[in-house]
Image 1 (tube, helix red, strand yellow):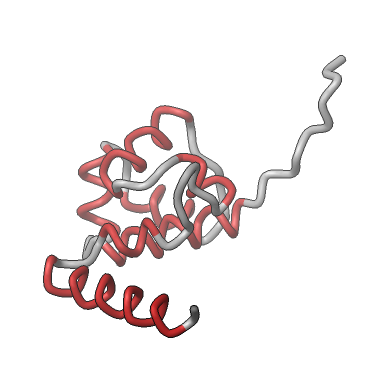
Image 2 (spheres, one colour; image 1 turned 180 degrees about the vertical axis):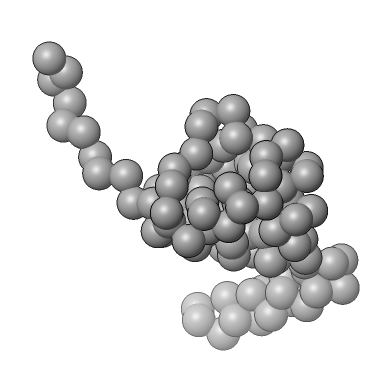
Length: 110
């Protein structure tokens, strides 16, 4: 038997994070499905938490969405933030605005 306790896999939360990252990249379910080489219905089912995903699909989703598996599966990024997936989907002007806002906020919290 395994000495570690198995953590329950939360299909709905994983699906929600995938959907959020997809929308942040301005991708449709159809375009994501094509990029990951799965059916559109499968992406829809994953996003709604109806089914899980294979390791190969997880790897491809991470590559296309430019987020970590740790973020998609558990909502955290090693050395980063759960907001990394959203930030990755911003255009350069939006990223500059966010960077400036965070710097301004950080300066006011001292």
